[in-house]
Image 1 (cartoon, rainbow, N blue to C red):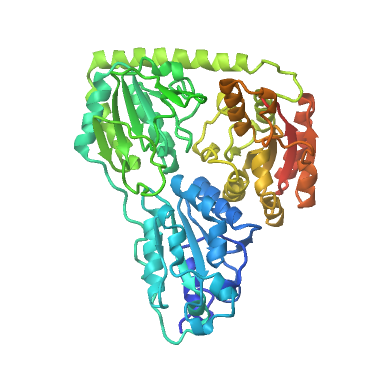
Image 2 (image 1 turned 120 degrees about the horizontal axis):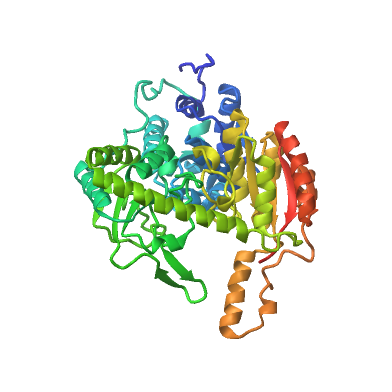
Length: 585
């Protein structure tokens, strides 16, 4: 029935799925085992010769998170296999986060057998859904369940195309257990090797680009606000060139690394700099509200920082792929120009247009030069203030987050490093030098996401030999502690530094706000929030999973030595964890 690249004869219908996995060059498959895909599993191992390799994960959520982090860091989608209905339901939160983070991910599931005559008593009934994709249809780009092997190649190709078309996102292909386990009786053609897997990117309307260029030239203090630009190849460099061409400040919304934080035009995290802005240019943004509002977390009141007469324009994907179920699209910002299309094409076109309009205009050149000087001075003053503020309670034990950020930076700054997700409440963005686009694939998305995503990031950078650092919240690791075993088993080198305040402190802060608002006892705010009595020993936990572990380390003067010892382990190609204790406030 045909041969694969290892010259083995296809004998089972699940062999076709393996050939498609190879055709589309997936490098890894993350999974938690299940009988519903035993046919596909056997084909991957014995027909596909374990190429690509499968990563055994302790929970479906971890499998999805690894694929999430891998795609953010590498730009390449990973494959995930989820066991029938129950495995899919375990993975739902992680899939939702991948969807709202615009991450491509090829999820394969299984169900049935849909032929009632072939179902085992009880288990094949209770673990089977009529249309299984319904469970996640509201937060994947596409799902499909082919009825026969004839529908598998075309739907696989379409799913890959949908997944990798911007804005990207996860897709779900559900394969009947009976379909997988059936013998292959005839030749099933695959998509031709010459077929393009993904459409070319969409160019924004040149008229809209010119309108944005004219507004940039006419305004006095523009601000560029990129969110996902850095995910695309060349996006980081394109942002630098655009900012320098027009002399605009840049506020980097950290869902990707879009702009170097020590560049003199970087104004990220400095909300005072927004007060004089008269034009905001959103670039591949989904949410500009958080960056441009001052939030009173107690009253939920969000007050604009930018002036009422500030003009707004945007370039990106706007309402394309907007969810009909969740409100991940955030509050709509009215704009005078909306250029629909890919910033990987639109930003260079905008920069070229600006260069032509600026050329020969000496007055405009002087204006841009003067603006660069003003923004650069503010950047330097803000940076100096951050370093001064970081010294507060420097020697306190437990240590402050600025002190932890400093100690980690001193150990890794001369390495080729990558930060996986958490930024210690932005302290690392105020201290480290994010000078290359791969330094940070973007912030974490919520509790129970970071350890898996971090492993995916580390897996993507393993072949480059980079030092991958995970500033790991304690509450997050408590959800998915089994992920440490995965890192040890597959020797995924990463430096895990516990950001351990022994609490779900984000929620603790909310209870403090409620107590102050209502006049109740602030000292009770920790109830239902603390992670002490007993305190988890993360160093011991790591060692029990086969990961080098040390700690808890509470005195800041002891942190650097522990980090240096852990770094040597990571350089040997293995994961290491240092449990550092930080202050609650």
